[in-house]
Image (tube, rainbow over all chains, first blue to last red):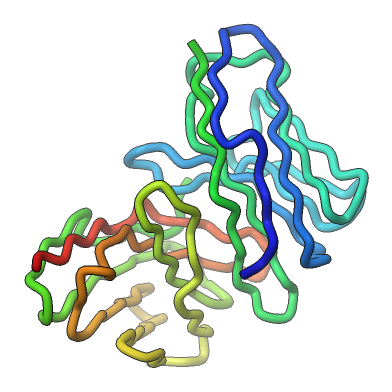
Length: 112
Length: 110
């Protein structure tokens, strides 16, 4: 299994507070992704990274920012959390050779 | 917007039966992938089929791809209780951004 660790795994916060989710990988994969999963929507791409300091927006990027200062770490930040950002967030990495994604176990965020 | 859509949304079968689910997509793709998600867990890659392939097998899994109809199917043969999970198709348009459907929830009854 690819070594992908997400933290925290569970978080409850209040509207308007900042939140940072961390994804750490040990596979030296170049590509990293943040998805959110909501009932009826499957997984939707928030942001992705194709290298250190190289990031780009996905289809639901509003209200989120990311940073990647090291190959192994990809941070997702909600500057001011809203109730609509209550979701399960998944980090994934991709080895360019195979094209398949390796997923973390998810971070469940509740915004009250 | 989602590129892939699975059908049916939910499927309940008896242990030992086959399970078939379908995925339709909208634009041309480089490859199509299927993933499994057990309750409360992350997604796990099952199989990848490239746009120039029509059928692929992996153990009890059989995947077909019809690019003219922009559709794929996943067949799980001789299902087991451990196959109970949600299954997602994901399309790769050669831009390193997989697009996922909403998934099919499969329940295998003992």
